[in-house]
Length: 217
Ligand SMILES: N[C@@H](CCC(=O)N[C@@H](CS)C(=O)NCC(=O)O)C(=O)O
Image (cartoon, rainbow, N blue to C red; front, side, top):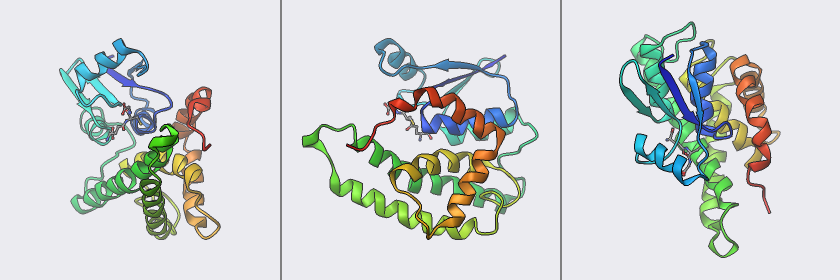
């Protein structure tokens, strides 16, 4: 088994990579990284100086692959399975990548901003930044609500890279900024994602760690 995923089961961006691995039953060795441990943190930084996970190591090809989107592109290219994450058609592939970017940049990151603000000391909170993040989430939700109105997944019938990005962003996003009754399509899309066996497995494996999710105070 040549692939090792350096990750944590609670980490939302790690969920993206895990969903892709589980979708195709791709064999890999999980390496759970405890960022609270200085040695494990240093080992991760040795692989990827930015110090964020997920990171995929491929001993067979001598590659270290950081960034969830790039990991999924890498798996799709070098370890393809039944689920293809990047469509063959160039225009559909471009749209898939765009939707992946939207979920990461305009849902996932604002969600993280709100979540991580909860961990800040009382005298270092960023209410303005949090308000901006909430506004961004609502704008993104409105756009995605229209995109998924036809049912299916982010790109229609096929489950793609965009859905791997969507799940963690919307799962945690819905807890910090609820979709509201005016966005039933978004809620239904999240339920369709959660019903996917690979997604259900990722969530089940994270459950023992949910008590570590920062709560609103
Ligand atoms: N753009 C990166 C983001 C990765 C990321 O933010 N990972 C978080 C966990 S969800 C992390 O490693 N946080 C630890 C830190 O920032 O120290 C990706 O898509 O992989």
